Structures are given as structure tokens and as C-alpha cells.
Image (cartoon, rainbow, N blue to C red; front, side):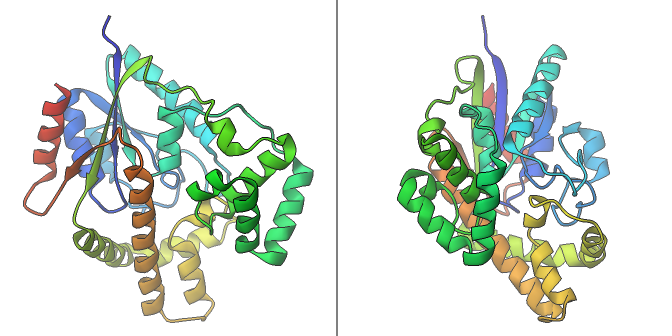
Length: 306
């Protein structure tokens, strides 16, 4: 019996995944499931460069604008909802096409979750107090001593994941990196096809810079002002643009500097995304350039899937 097919289209921010995905989805009878930790939030359309309403009418998208920015959201919720959508698509004889650049969300779908460790409010409160008093670097150094393998996979500024890794160790006495090895993936149940889009680094950085310029032209300042009137969840606050524009609104620096910081931080994020994905040897990479259209790339991927 042929295995049901799942397709992933991954890559750094700004590379052009959405346009390729819409063209590919038409060819393979797929619906798109977002694999982006920020696009799940409502009211963040410009900030997260969501596909337009017209594009969504061409191909159905899932897990876009599904929760309020005041709500927390995590990988366990994402996995549960995404796999439920997969089951519904299989019943409709459609292929789930995951599209995005959040490595952790991709990993939790492909490789599964490690055995659940409930949150411990007391341990978490102590760690969050240490974060406020001593900062990210202190907690990161602590994690490096307790679980070096986990620390290597977490950015030193990612306080949320650092705290979670420390919490798991302090609660169970077991390193989170060891628990992660017990995950069960999808390979045995489905035919999993994983593609990545990449380009020359300077071309990518130019695209990112232009994308940020376009965000401001589309009304980013107004969107972020409206968002900041609400109490944003810790996750939503991590969206690039929130912190940078806060500094501008409070008079710490100019609008030009806020834009420069957004461009720089977006480039750094793209670099981290590529570092994560390049470690996964299952990803088949497609190099893109201005001479090749999204439709042509989609045709190339379609042939690989046929």
C-alpha cells in the first residue's frame, strides 16, 4: 500500500516560499499549512508578511491568523492542530504542504515531541527571576554546563527556550537533549518529502532589506502601534519589529535606526534559520535567483514529487 504523502517547503525569511508554495499546491492538489510561529497570530499581517487574501482564495491556508496576539502558543499545540489538519486533508484526498521557516515547528512535525514534562510554576518563577536579575547570558551559561547539547541548539538570546530546557532538567534530573532522542517521527507512517529554498547570501540579504522597506510603506508603524495597545504574549513579543519600533516610539532612536535594526535582525534571523536547516541532511535544496520564477521552481519540485 502506498504511503500518504506530506510535503515540506522550508527556507529563510524573505526567500519567496509563499509564491512557490501556491504554484506547487495547484500542481499537486495540496492545501498549505503554515509552519511559522508568528503567522499564527491575528493582527500581524504586515509584520509577518502574510499572504494576501487573494492568494488565500487561490489555495486554502491553515494555521494563519488563528489566535489572538495576547495568547501564548507552543509547539505541542502546533503539532496537535497541524496533524489534525493533515488527517482532514487526507480524507479529502489532498496533500498537506507545510510552508515556513520555523525550525522548531518543522522538527516537531517531522520528528515528533519528546515525552511531555509538565511545567513547574515554582521552578519557572525562580528562573524568570534570575532572568530579570542576571540576564540571558547567565541562564545560557548555566544551561551550557548542565546540558551542552541542548545549549548548542538554542540561541543565547532565546530566553523562553533556555528557561524551558533548564526547567526540564531541574524538574526531572534528565537533560532535555536526552528526552528529545526518544521522539517518534512520521517517516514510518507517511512519505515525507522535504525541500528547502536558498540563494546567494548577498541576494537574500538584499531581498530582506527591501522587504522591510516594503513593510513600512504598507503601514507597519500603524499596525505595531495597534498591537502595542494590547498585552502581547511572550511569544508574540518576539516578532521582529516589535522591540525595534518600541525603541522608536519611546524616543530612544530615529525611525531610520528602527528600520536599520529591523533589517539587521531579520538578516541575523535568516542566518540562524539556515544554520538550523543545514544540519538536516533530509532537506533537498533548491537554489533560486531572479532569473527563475516561482512557477518554474514549483514545476521543478513537482517533477521531483512525481
